[in-house]
Amino acid sequence: MTSTDCRVETQLTATVNAGDASLPVQSTAGFSAADGIWIERTGANEEQTTVAGVLSNSLTASVSMGHPGGSFVTRMALSPALAHLSGLPLGAADHDFPGPEEAETLALPCNHSFWMSMPM
Image 1 (cartoon, rainbow, N blue to C red):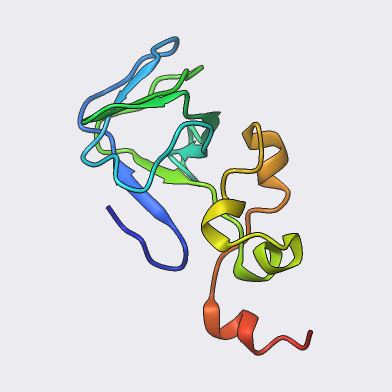
Image 2: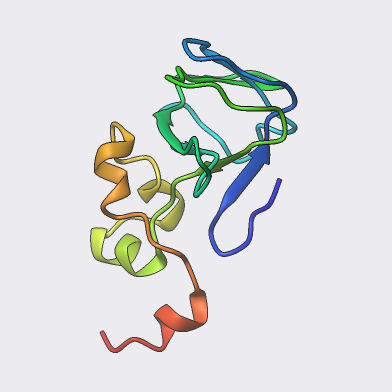
């Protein structure tokens, strides 16, 4: 799992096919039900979906296309500035969106030094 720049990321441990609802992953740490996720972000088969549940070694989430083992699964997260504007703690703000459509408009890279240099 990678957790830099406010990103939580893991990789698929096996291929998943279109219509599958179980994503076998290296780690589920940092993922929760209702999280918006990207699979193969910036890849040819980039897909957004929502985590329905978290098991010990898999995420429950429907996919509409196939993804090879080793594909990255990335949790959508709010930047510190947007979390601040929402009035919620950063960790809580990640979970306030029912699906990836809403989260995508607010999911920005988190670079702490950049946001801390912004005037408020």
